Amino acid sequence: MPELPLIFEIGTFVVLGIILLFDLLLVLKRPHEPSMKEAGLWVTFYVGLALVFAALMFVFTGPEYGGQFVAGWITEYSLSIDNLFVFIIIMARFSVPRKYQQEVLMVGIIIALILRGIFIALGAAVIENFSWIFYIFGAFLLYTAYKQATDSGEDEEHAGDNKLISKLKSVLPMSESYDGNKVRTVVDGKKVFTPMLIVFVTIGLTDLLFAVDSIPAIFGLTQSAFIVFTANIFALMGLRQLYFLLGGLMTRLIYLKHALSVILAFIGVKLILHAMHVNELPFINGGEHIEWAPEIPTFVSLAVIVATIVVAVIASLIRSRVTDNSAARSDAAGEVADAPVVDGELDEAAGEAGVKDRRR
Image (tube, rainbow, N blue to C red; front, side, top):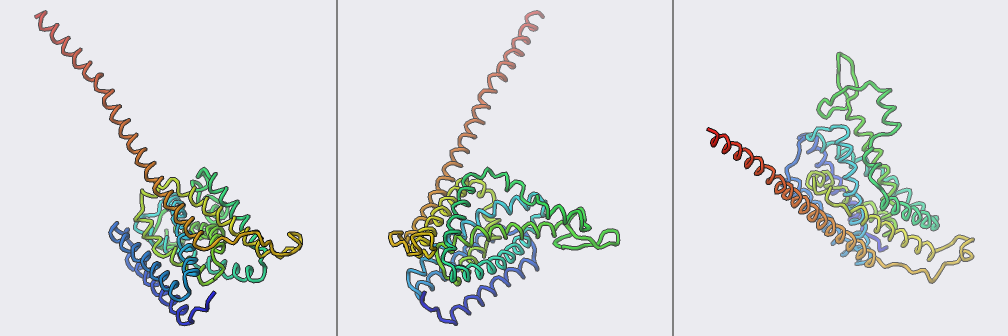
């Protein structure tokens, strides 16, 4: 990869750090549920910022690595949107007040950045010294893709139900209700933890699982630690605003999981082909590179990822509209079916009234 100017890398992390710090201070100072307009403006700002950075990558490093960033960012962003489904379930399961959900999401994002930073550093070091790790990454992504495609959603419904959470509840003194956004409070003169601690721990554990899935996926698109980390940062920035912006729309993206399954499987195959191309394992092809194994170009990866996401979103919205129309027709049919019964009762009542009048 062409050497990026040191000032560019340092400047990137300084600017992103300042933005994240400002975002965190804003949440802590004024916890609230953002309006659709506010959430939309923030999401637009963060997406625009990512596109500006992508343009700078194209200028400084050329189309190959600029394309790698865009492909990595879109993949991580899509995975992050899918992760929001789990966050919604966690918030509902622990009855987190809407006013403080922004803070919970912000803490979750910070935990995710720390965990992903550790995974990226470890992954980059392993990749540099052991090319065979691509076989493992590829197989893991194929397995993840299969699990994603066959997932019934039961695991998500039980998000937060695990032994560690149960242990914390049984060992730590815990209040029955929240005290604002505090982790500790005083009840009957004793200091106890609030359920907010359990929420933070659950979010942190969820982020750990997400990092295990997403880091191998983006390393299948680029081996640059700088691109991997910046793509993750841009994917996580604005995630909490997106949580409020999408709202009920998220439940309509029914084919998103299938799209992510296709993307993960594609990247898994790409990783295995790359591992074969640079093969050094002695028991495979005598330790020689497998020359016939193709290297899938970055622009092909980007096209597959974008096309898959677009098709999934359009198909999801069409399916939702068809479902809504069917439900509306069913309701209308039900009302029509009830009408003759009412009319019949009125006719019967009128008939009885007429009989009584004739008797008189």
